[in-house]
Length: 436
Image (tube, rainbow, N blue to C red; front, side):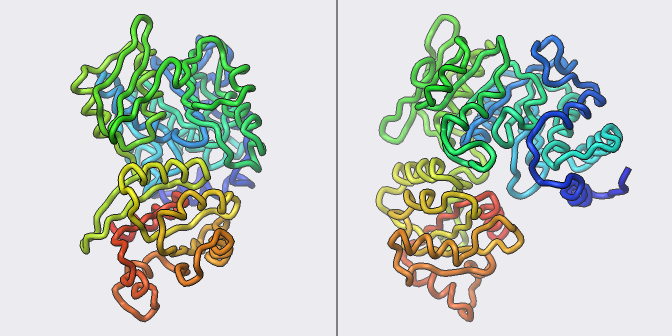
């Protein structure tokens, strides 16, 4: 067993353990899971992991983290305990593994890592496989009522699919990670639907599911706009969902998270037979928040900062919709960086009307990141004036009070007093580290 004293040392070692960062497939994780006392990838829930809990697995292009966060809050108000596994993290790895909404300690994660390392023998695991097994051990040890498992990539061959769910949720189907999942919504839908098992209910929050997905989904599927739906009126929202006998609803509330994900969580809560009293439910929904999802902060000088991890066209379309609902025609400066393998032009298109000045961040330590030069070329093709585009070597360059780089002078010349940060989890993390 490797001798690692800190969580950061373990994480650095995990990044070197397997030959490739991503290798989809269930054979490795299934083997180690069995050694750890789990019986994964079974066709009957009776044969699955011997734990007195229920599992909810969520796949989807966007909205998975918001769904899990919503479930954490809703199940807590229903008196149930939860273990949530999400990815990626923004500031700390511990964000990925939570008990009742709180990140677990370094020591808890290290203890799980040590047990996994003993169990794997000579078999190598990817970073995500190791993390998934750690979450499973921690949740089993804690004896929580519900495991909330977010798929990392796709669904069918994702490590999370090692465990048999009691409910499967699909939040959305859009183009992203095409190199792994396919170039069409239909192909991606097949991968997402791989989390479904015979005999379990499915909740589908995708309002426009590909035809092949509706053919795959079982009869007991609860569709948005059919079994549950969202009604928006004058900047507020009302949620409707069904149980075995009736249709239920909230009052008109404010909600900062993607509405379809919250609605799906309400439908899942109902399927599990729980209800939250009306006033408490409204308060819970109004208080939902998740770092990097239309997150708003104010700097000491009064500048408002909106941070969103939107990194594909569907996500930036939702971001633009949220801006329209909250800011009318007001303009922002944008601090942005994206991965080079994304459809950058399509992701930027919805944001053009909201941005006056573009500050392009170099993520030099991220090999996949697009360079400011690549980003600038895309903006120029979209018609952005070159004098409104600035390259930044470091995030701190934007927030510096000195004038020697010229960057802060340009920012001060803007009348926006509003900063929009988007494009990737890394972008949001860099800015949060700078301003917090």
